[in-house]
Image (cartoon, rainbow, N blue to C red):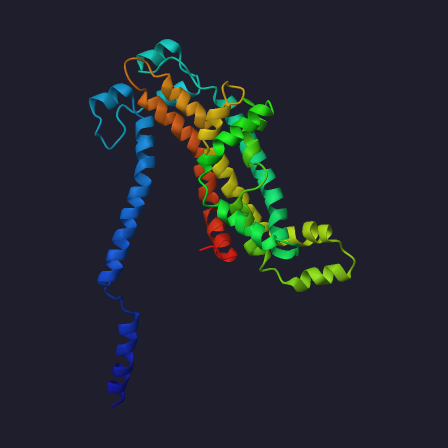
Amino acid sequence: MSTASASTAIEPTAAVGGRRRPSVGRILAWAVMILIMIVTVLPFYWVLRTALSSNTGLAGDPTSILPVDVNLRGFERVFGMQPTEEAVADGGSGASMNFWVYLRNSIIVATLVTAGQVFFSSMAAYSFARLRWRGRDFVFGVFLAALMVPSIFTLLPNFVLIRQLHLIDSLLGMALPTMFMTPFAVFFLRQFFMNIPRELEEAAFLDGASKARVFFQLILPMARAPITTLAILTYITAWNDYFWPLLVSYTDSSRVLTVAVAVFKSQAPSSGTDWSGLMAATLVAALPMLLLFTATAKRIVNSIGFTGIK
């Protein structure tokens, strides 16, 4: 009798501890996720595969999954490390990118845009979230409506303004139109500021703190996570911007990496596009932002979820 009861008690435990067969829904979900990952990663792999191949090898075997005639000569052409004769023989134009100059310009422009946008947007967001002034909700509604305006509509007015300020072909002129604030940045930070308990601010006011002191010494330190997230997103956006820098930069002194890649492509010889060098240039231009996003993706997702943006 005791043996039968013991075996009966053990059987449910074994059933619970045993491995369950995966359901059809779980298998389909994993299949869809794997497919999405392949579709997402494949373009990046193809860029790397082309950059590590030679133009001659690509012409002979364009459908190969693996790199053809593996070499780093495409990167050498991008960094100007390959002699002109060898570059032409490898299918290049003989011209090279002033990579370090373009990298410096991209860093300066992205930093100016990020620092200005985070600073001014945080003040505007705090004003919309906490201060009471006539027309506040209406002005904020206008800000939200601006989210629906395509950025291409503002290119011509911005270009006219930058030209009148004599800032064409300068790093400041490139950064100025987006250096103050954007509707998304204001909305993003306002959502966080509205979740901060008012009792904290009221306690600071009772201690004699001014509104400016409360904002800089209390609110901003508490908003470190969303501000960091906004800075990362803004930096990536400014780094990847192409059309506006193309309009206002004409020389190497103000040309950024995204425009430099297009210039590198336009220098293709008559024999055809230097695909190996072009993909190497593309990878070099995109790699810093890929690494930045990979390192901060979890922070971005957590902060967006916390601020209530769906």
